[in-house]
Amino acid sequence: MPCPIRKSVGSKWLVYILRCRDGSLYTGITNNLPKRINAHAAGKASKYTRSRLPVAVVFQEAAGSKSAALRREAAIKQLSRRRKDQLLAESRRARVSRKRVQHQRAIGTKRPQSA
Image (cartoon, rainbow, N blue to C red; front, side, top):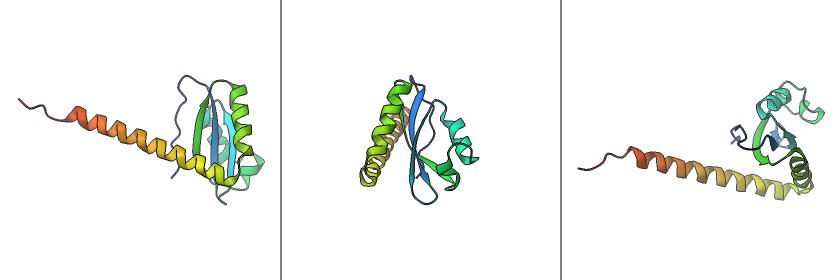
């Protein structure tokens, strides 16, 4: 399931991972994810993804600065494919857990109050 694109809060730099049509992963950084994804989709962002369209965002992580984003990108690129898949699974579980809590809170606020 693709990762929804979120605006970064409190940080303008993001590290992101795309899953390409052939199943390979592409890791990059940006300070404007929607614009960068559109560039990837148009085949203008990366030679690597240009021949592997379509792509889907499967991971994104806020970074405190451009240099922090570059360091995290380099660290992710050094991971084995197995470890990258684990990172994606952990991120997906955390996202599902956050959504579940938000849903429970929303339901809790809509309950009728007894007299």
